[in-house]
Image (cartoon, rainbow, N blue to C red; front, side):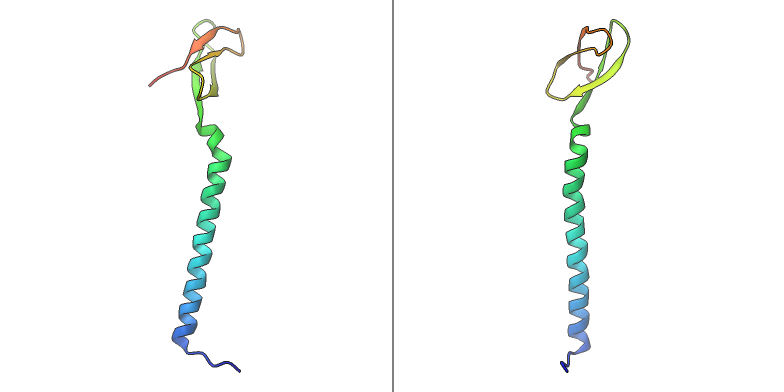
Length: 77
């Protein structure tokens, strides 16, 4: 049977636990970026013709209203 000191066993145990927590942290951080990045890159528009509030992608400065089709500029805060 392999004899191992308690200090080495504790070091391996803590190291494995730290590696597991670090791995889960990296996994969920990347998952968060993939899943929620599309929602973060949306901007709000307000139609001045019909009063509709809607969102569209961040790259657009002007977007047509889905209700009436009027071209609106993005809201800036």
